[in-house]
Length: 201
Image (cartoon, rainbow, N blue to C red; front, side, top):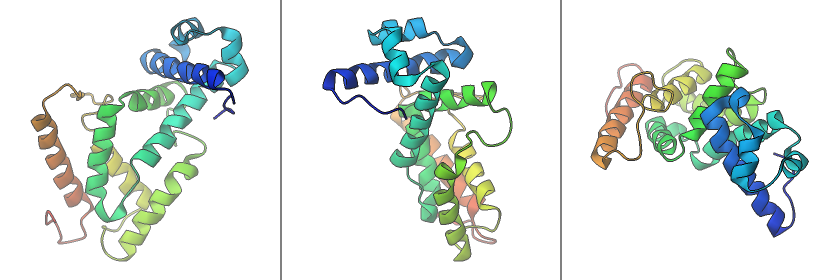
C-alpha cells in the first residue's frame, strides 16, 4: 500500500479514493474503470489521486492487495477446522462481494493462469504450513497442502459472485444461508477427512 497521508483531512480523502475506486474497479474492471468517476465519487481531483497512488494500475494494486490482506486477517485459517474456515469465508464473501469481483478482474485482465499475485507466498505460506502440520498428525488427508487449500477455498466460493450457477446475497433469508453453511461444512469435512473418517465431527 502507498504511504498514507498524515493529516486527518488527507487521510479522509485517501479513504474516500479507496472506497470509490474499490466500487469502480469491482464493477468495471481495470481497463473499464475511469479515474474521472473515481475522483467525482471521492470528491477530490486527479492530482490528489495521482499524488497518493501514482496511476490507475497502482491504485488497483493498492486496493487488491489490501483486499487480500483483509481476508487473511479477518478470516484467519484454522487447520484444525477447515470446514469452519470455509464457512467463515462464505460469510465474508456475503459481507464484501467486491473482494471476489476484484480477484476475478485480476484473473481476467492480468493473470489468466498460475498464481493470482506474485507475492502469493506472503498470503499462502502460513496457511500451507498449518495444513501440513495437521496432515502430519493425521487430522487432514494426505495430499499437496496447496491443493487442499485451493479445494477448500473453491468450495467456500460455491455461491460467491464468481459462481456460474447462483450468486448468494446478504439480502436472502438467514435460514437459506444456514442451510448452505451446514452443507458446506459437511462437504468440506468429508473432502479433507483421512481414509475411513467421514464423520461429521
